[in-house]
Length: 234
Image (cartoon, rainbow, N blue to C red; front, top):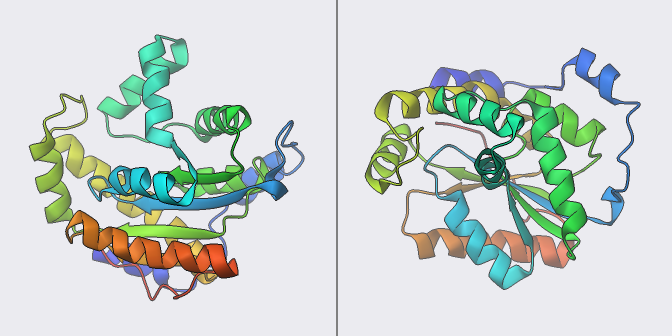
């Protein structure tokens, strides 16, 4: 996984596929008003503790927490055809098509009374990134990157025992592999724009949150990230 991370860190100019740019550039954001939004993306591998931290952040800083994973799970529970497809993809440890994720996020943002969004688990790959920039037309204020080793992620995921179809050792390894191959380049892309803040997510929850608070206080006060990310390693 280190090799994948290093490859992603060596001068990525753009991870947006050209054909996706051309397809999506003419689409309109519809009823959305992205220029009015304050958006922080939250990225990190499975088991990195993103959701726990997002709950604390939304309570203290007034962000509306939108979890791509939770929105997808609600769609699964709805029993829709898209939900059935999402369920099957999750069982195989694969990523859901961007158009589905974007649709669910846009619906949630339109329903929210807030203009400040903490978007957890998106964009996860190059296709997601293209959709965020060209369909949703969102330019995030910052990216919180929760860094957690594969060993610690495996330990956490195998011990949480939530009965999820994707919480077995083989599928977890596949999810971590997909994360390394698909999400790490996105993190490095935003790093090239000076937007990423790396958080050591293997520490106790409160220690992690103290680091998060420092970053968000800087964003709230200055509109920029206080400390620049120095490279993505897994």
